[in-house]
Image (cartoon, rainbow, N blue to C red; front, top):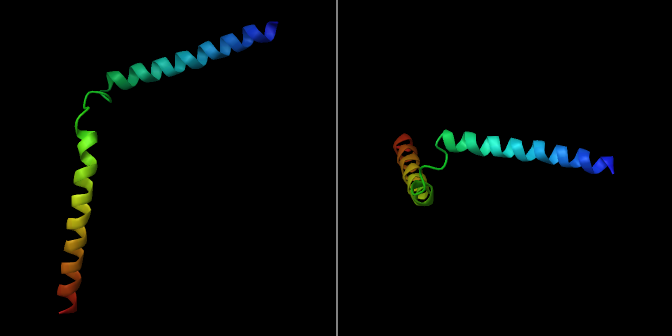
Length: 64
C-alpha cells in the first residue's frame, strides 16, 4: 500500500516538472508565432533549389 503513495508522489513531481517546462516555454515565446512554422517549409524548398542553382553556376564558372 505504501508503494501507491510513493508512485503518487513521483507522478506529482514529474507532472510538476512538465508544468514548469510548459510555463517556461510559454514565457519565452515558443507559442507566439503560429503562422510562420506552417509556411516555413515552403520557403525551405525554394532556398535549397536556389542554393543548388548557385552551386551549379559556380562549378560551371570554375570549369570554364
